[in-house]
Amino acid sequence: AEVEPEWMTQFAVMGSVYANARYGIERPRVGLLSIGEEPGKGDTLRKPAYELFTNAKNLNFIGNVEGRDIMTDKVDVVVTDGFTGNVALKTGEGTAKLISGLLRESLMKTPFSMLGALFARGSLKRLQTKIDPRRVNGGVFLGLNQTVVKSHGSADETGVAAALNLAYRLGQSGFSEKLAARVASAAAIAQDTILDGPNTNSD
Image 1: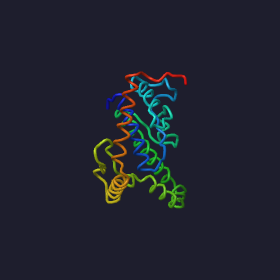
Image 2: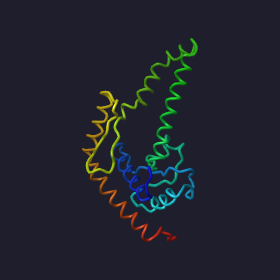
Image 3: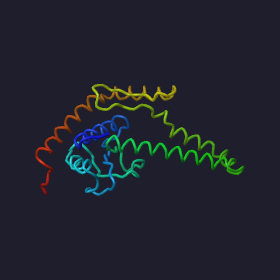
């Protein structure tokens, strides 16, 4: 919940390596979650983290992003602290449930809307499959010596299969070794930046 700017750099590297290993994104775009896109925006955590991200040679850092950007294709990896990240995730979950409930209520409100829902059943089914959380089940514990994937406690066979498939794919890709090497490199760069100060060379 409470982290240091240097840790944020490690989070960014781990998220970038994970996006590459799981989704095949060659150079994942990394954004720092803040209250505005401008470099000067943020608090005592994000301002120094911004400097570290900028100086990290192994990051495709695109700058600050806002909460509204999380669900868009503007960014591949969003980095923040655990406290803010948890709030953002739970807000997203609540919004999804609200929209789902309102949609169901609207479709069942009148005979005409129910008829429309019947005609749209195929499309609604495809949408349901696409956003089915069971098919992306499995939280990866980044930063451990080996690949660890935790399945949700209430997952059914579809969810467990998704988590097992993810663990297998990450294991086959050498994910743990790649992650360890990249994090060590990022930590060294961050330490040099702290000792020497940010690079202000106009060249």
